[in-house]
Image 1 (cartoon, rainbow, N blue to C red):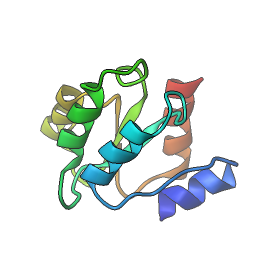
Image 2 (image 1 turned 135 degrees about the vertical axis):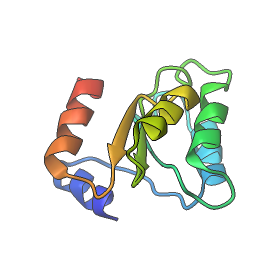
Image 3 (image 1 turned 90 degrees about the vertical axis):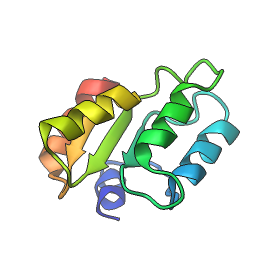
Image 4 (image 1 turned 120 degrees about the vertical axis):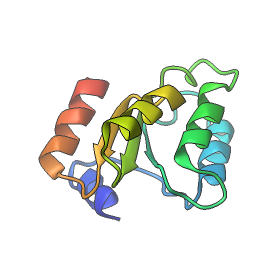
Length: 111
């Protein structure tokens, strides 16, 4: 919810899903290029963010390997960051989300 508010303040459109399987299904269903980035919570029901990211990265479509995926988690130890990278995530954002840091990371990745 907080992330959504921050993105809306910057004029971004977004879609929220409630679990990892829905995230995979939504990306799979969307036309390539529909989304500029994915903000993936790590601890979700049905399928966690690591597994969802692996499935997205493994899809046979042109944007599956290049869409920026941000890990969103309260776990901020070095091993958590490493696990996010190993799953195919581009950045690791610790909760609670800091608006300034969030915008800096988005700018680094998307611009």
